[in-house]
Image (cartoon, rainbow, N blue to C red; front, side, top):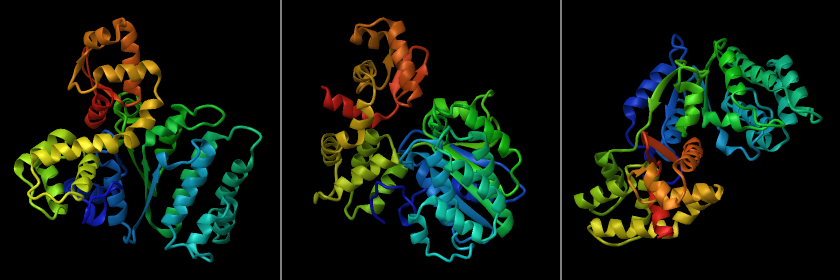
Length: 387
C-alpha cells in the first residue's frame, strides 16, 4: 500500500467496509430496485467508494458494473456524453461479448466502427441504428429525450441478452444539467432519466454528487425528480482515528499522537489531503514524525501544491466572487455583516455573491447569516496566498 492521489482501490482502500457491504448486498439483489446516491464534498472519497465497488464486483457472473464519470468528458456536450457512455458500456461487457477485435484497438477507432461491431453480435440492432442515426446528424441539436431512452434501452437489452443485472454508476450525476446541446440541457434531462428509470428491469442506477445544491435539485428535496428513488448515503471525512490509521499504514516510521492530531486538524480528515500530506512526509527522513514536522510539511504543500490544485478553479470565478472568498479565508465561520464590512459592500449585494458560490459548491451556509468555505484546505491556501 502507498499514498495515492488517484481514487484509492484494492490495497490502497481504507475503511468504509459497512457501507461497501451494504451497497454490494443491495445492488446484487434483484428483488431490490433502488440504487444509491452518494453525497459529500469534493475529495472526500466518493469516487474511491464507487471504484472499489466496481473492483469488488468485477468477477461476479450475475452483474456487470459500468462506471462513468461526467467530469472525465473532454467535451461537455450531449453528443460526447452519449458516445463515451456507449463505449464504457462496451468495456463493461468485454468479457461476455464475442469480440472479434482486440478491445484496446476497438476503443481507439471511431464510434461508428463500434456500432458496426455491436451490430455484428446481433444485439439490439434497432436500438443501435436509432442511436447511430441520431448521433450522425450534425445539422441540428440532438434529440435528448430519444438518446436517453435509447441508451437505457441498450443497457436493458445487454442485461437481458446476457442475463445479468447492469449496475450503472454515474459519478457527478448532477453535471448532466450542464451538458450542452445547442444550449444547456437543464433539469429536463434529469426528469427524463427519472421517467425512464421507472421502467428499468435489468439496470440499477447509482449516482454521486459533490455540490449539495445540485444534489437537492436531483434527489434530496421533495420537489426533485429522484426524491426517495435512491438510498441516500452522506460520505463524511475520516475521523481522527481513521486519519491516523491511513498515515500509520503507509509510513515506515513512527508518528506521534500529537502529529496525528495536527494532521487531522489541518486536513479535517479529507482523504485526498491526508494522502497528499502522506506523500510529502515520505520525502522526509525525520523520525519520529512529530507535530512540528506535520505543520512544516503542510505549509510546504500549500506553497508548492496549492496553486496546482486550486488556482484554475479559483480564477474561473468572477472578481467579486474571488474577493468574497478572500474575505472569508482562514475563518472557521464568517458572518454576513463581517464579510460585508471587509468588502465594503452592502449585505444584499454580498448575499448574491455568496448564493453564487453556494451553487458552485465553494461555500456552505451554516445557519442564518453565517457562512463558511466548504473546503478547509482551500481556505488555508487562500489565507496563505493572499495574506
